[in-house]
Image (tube, rainbow, N blue to C red; front, side):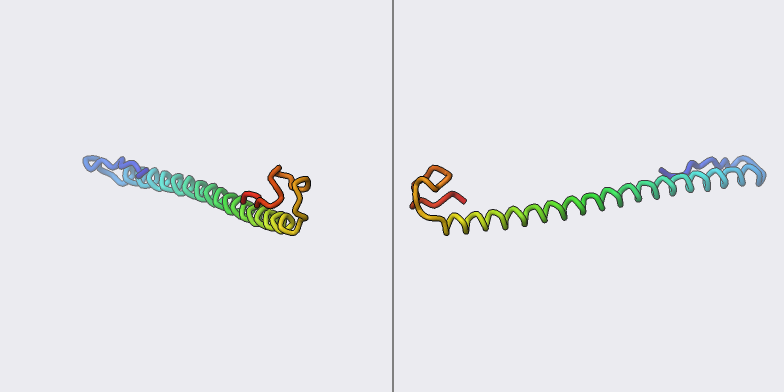
Length: 96
């Protein structure tokens, strides 16, 4: 949003020009304050997103490790139809 151009070239006198400059400066300050507030809000959102991504990566790595351990346990488990929890014959591999 650009400052409003309230300058009337047909008017004479410095008092009108000073008021226009003050109004423009106030409007620019308001815009700057709004931009600063938006920037702070964006920084907070970005930080929260980074935190969530970090937590998701930790969860993914944890799940991969658990899956690896379960696969190792299944590979080391005795091969019998009763012990296999997925209902498949003991010699068949579990889906991965």
